[in-house]
Length: 79
Image: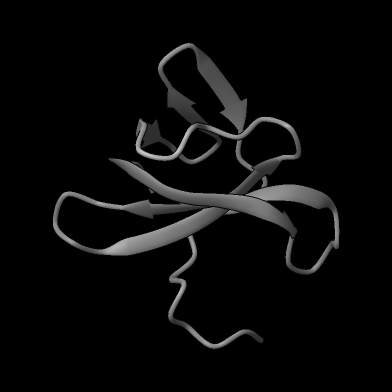
């Protein structure tokens, strides 16, 4: 999936199913939906930054990184 939004919060996390150290990026989309995905540890965008993403990468001003997961609904149950 591709999209645009604004970074709400970034915190340390681990990639589901692999336990790889990562940054968890929570995003608000323009339509009001909220989603998250994981990127490599140490590559965090600033909170409040505009962000765009595609199936494999995420970008914000001055940076482009590989996504470690697809988009996830933060309200969905784990499992």
